[in-house]
Length: 181
Image 1 (tube, rainbow, N blue to C red):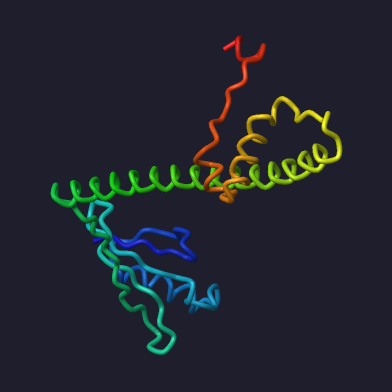
Image 2 (image 1 turned 180 degrees about the vertical axis):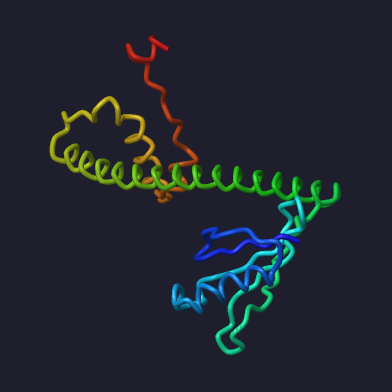
């Protein structure tokens, strides 16, 4: 078995066994070339391999090197059943994320519609006042259909966003830009 001597994880030397390594350190200490052994560790390896057997560290209480167990990391091997379940969970999560995204888009669309409705009601009230003051006032072309629908809903006493949303048919405007695509 070979041993390597390290100071702060820096390799100092390689020795045939632990005792030779300890003798080297004691020689440094006895000749006042070394003050503190706390920084030093000894790692043992099988001959002609890089398989570490153990690691020794200096213990100030016992004034000797003691063994430090090497942690063995074991990788888990997943069964095919586990992999399938993991894949199913991933697919379900993906479907849920897609549904969540669609719901968020719908929610955003509804909020935008409600905000548009609030602004349209304000315009409806203003145009109604203008018409009551001036019979010749004409509602702007872009708002005519909405104005007619608002008036109908108001006369039926059911003016609300829900009813407006159900009844109103959104128009698609033909413009020079729409002909490009």
